[in-house]
Amino acid sequence: MTDFWVTEAMNGFGMTVQVTEELCRCQSKFQKIEVYQTVKLGRMLLLDGIIQLTEYDEFAYHEMLTHVPLFAHDSPKRLLVIGGGDGGVLREAAKHSELEVMDICEIDAEVIEIAKRFLPSISCGYDDPRVKIHIADGSEFIKDKPGYYDVIIVDSTDPGGPGTPLFGEEFYRDMKKALRPGGVIATQSESAYLLPEIVKRLYLASTQVFRSVNYASIAVPTYPTGTIGACVAGDRDDVTQIARPIPEKLSKQLRYYNSAIHQAAFANPSFVKQLLNS
Ligand code: SAM
Image (tube, rainbow, N blue to C red; front, side):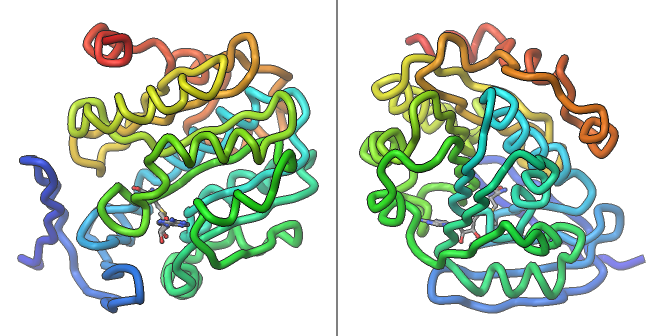
């Protein structure tokens, strides 16, 4: 048995995974990119030393970040994904036949290339003919798209690297401008155990801009603290509600998302409620 372990260390926590082989390690213009074959968790992608996904549990994160906002909208036709270069959100979005536009704005073309080469079960999201790739900083890209999208999903890295502008209030204002009336956003919003100050900041930024906002928790064992969240927001009466039936054909393709978990994800523990409302 291998004795090779890879550790993500973040904010006083660590997540250690046993690996058998390093498949890829390079430095792009924006970040260090690593892919490992793990012992128990399939392949694992890290950016700047932070675990982005493992094949073992990526379905939980990608299904929730995608289907919660898409089912919170009654008729989504145009989707923008910001970040998400691995293709996982696109793979889930491709299950929605009602989408006509599936744009992705990823800052780092090398993440896309490496995902296509080493993570085919995730990058298969790019196979859908509706997908159009834009290589750009998402915070700049949306400024040129007033009133265009129905749903925007931000699947970004943590603040500190190229994702930093995606965590500011200005970006939330620009996302609102880029939406058609009734549009919905969902943003990777960190763990309330690990990075409470960022959860709070994103929630506040959303409430400054949108009428209905809430934080959904997602259980993902391989992220430090085993949980991550999404801020879901829109100018709707209640963005936590499912706005249309979930087709049975789509449900059968899912392993985490269903109507009960859609609503349960917003039932936050008291310490999270206090954090959001403080
Ligand atoms: N699931 C993830 C996690 O754990 O945080 C995020 C995965 S996805 C690989 C994050 C992507 O966001 C990366 O490919 C990164 O290049 C991209 N990204 C970071 N900053 C960006 C920006 N300003 N505009 C567009 N894409 C960005």
